[in-house]
Length: 265
Image 1 (cartoon, rainbow, N blue to C red):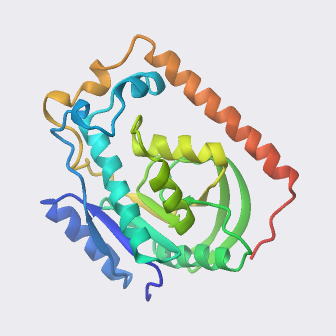
Image 2 (cartoon, helix red, strand yellow):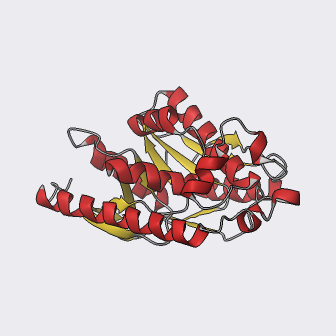
């Protein structure tokens, strides 16, 4: 199919096999893309990065981040910047281990068509590659060539950043808000979007992951920081973070339900 929205593929320099596999998958669907050179954080000491706040990370996550997590975060910042620079209203960001379902790009276009038929953009980011989706409200049904899918208001925004569809408003807001880095990018997306209830997801997900080990995973002396850098209160902080987020999401769900069902387009 002819692409009517820009696609950005995050890929580490030198990861030619992953690039070839992703390129072939996109070619099969007739989709072009812009490659985003991933930030290589594998041997990075996070404490040398000005944008990283170690004290706040340890307070929020109960541990320091590793270089690979910060590299992944910067890679998604680069992708959002590239999207905003195009001036397009919507943009799809893919990681290079993504696997599109047969009607994946058709469903992406249907999400965009659904949004453009409405009077306002009331979401920032759509997760199109989540494996587990909780605390949602169904708002529209999409009919694809491979069956139906549901657009959900994702009150508890799903983890994983395999496939993300940005609205322009959302990417601009993200670029204004992402500093300092205090958690991995998928944790940040949940933390950020749960405040405004501006996330959506498509179920079942149009994209899955190949499951291949990340090429930008941390190596070297900082590789085990996510284990050895844990504070004594790590588990307590994790539990408090998750419980607080779920309570906030449930509150959004109740508030959203009180508005009445959205008109399906």
